Amino acid sequence: MPKHPGVVNLSKFQGINNTELPENTDPSYLKEAINIDISKKGDVTKRLGFQKVKSGTRVHSIWGNELDCYYVNDGELRYLYKGYDVKALDTGIGNNRVDYLYLNGSVYYTSRGNNGTLTGDERKPFGIETPNLSPTLTEGAGSLYEGQYQVSLSYVDVNGLESGSRLATAITVGDGASIHISNIPVSSDPLVAYVRLYMSTTNGEVLYIAKDVSNGATTAIIHNDRNLITPNETISIDTPPLGDLISYFEGSVLIADGRTLWFSEPYTPTWFKTSKNFYQFDSEITMLMPLESGVYVGLGNRVVWLSGNSVEDLSAKEKEICKPVKYSNVKIPSGYIVIDNTPLGPKWLFTSDEGMYVCMENGVMFNVTAKNVSFPSADEGVGMFMQNDGINKYISLLKDQNSDGQNMAVGDLVTAEVIRNGIVIP
Image (cartoon, rainbow, N blue to C red):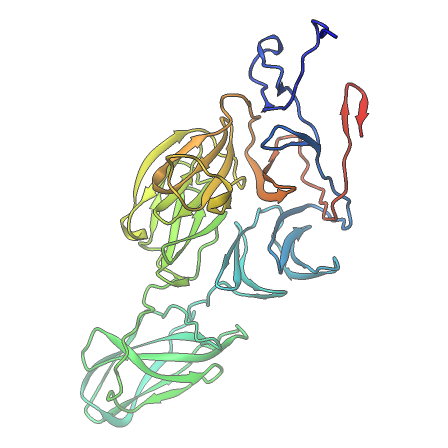
């Protein structure tokens, strides 16, 4: 039987095309695709949905992996157990979005008003505060040579993590003296175990570890300078600054606050020298996407590529003109996107007002949706990557001005319906 002239056979769908007029669009493209997935072969299947199992108020900033899950509920950072019970970990966060970094078995988090370190359902401070008072120095009997000595101190916690040290206090003594130290400040941090005392040699400028005393002890005596071997490395060390974004590159933790990108001392995520270790941009930082060879930085209306061998010698090069949607970026393993003649390794995906971009090593990035799909503009969103039924999915939720941000849904997967022309597709 001959085919009706008005019949079009569609063996597969190629996805969405909402940039062309309907009469100019290939029939294998869809104008809308609501609650459906399209496989590599062009098959259409019903998308899995969700069922709410936990309610919340003013919920945002959810993060999780195979073991742990954290989110903010009504200004309170919470741990979500597998049975959906919760534990409060931090308060006073309000509507400030929280960003997370998983590193060496712990989760570091930051927002405009709070930060900390999470391990399972326990929270610790993100670094140790520098002692807020200088000790009092007086002369006593001992075996020091005549001259000037400088004394400083820091805090050390039960895991050996050390704070920054205060500016040194100087004292001049006679021959055969000791230094009596009083009014040693006590840390209120329950994890701090020791106060570390530093001292210079006679008329020296470099300070060395002199002795440790228990946190809570307010006096100590240094009789001589014979054991001054290990120099002080904590001068000018600050606790991590607050910020909107946190990431990691070449041994350093990166924290973005407005137009400023701070970086920690190498392999010491809680030590920051905020007087010098930073980059300043001309617009707000909205995205950090580090790879082995550099870091993509999303700014207000463009993306730049920072490249170099370390955080101290990075140079910036503009890559794309677009408005990245804050928090929409997600990193994926190398095998999930394979494109000929492009660098190997992990990749980043993010959403912008110009479409969805893929970012690769060596500053190679391009828009993968500009030809067929037009995206709405948004300031914030969230991105995630998942696999289901052999389909790799990048999911980007965009928050516009009409989004109230009051709802949360966490639950098991259920099947949603596909409705076409008013008919439910079985």
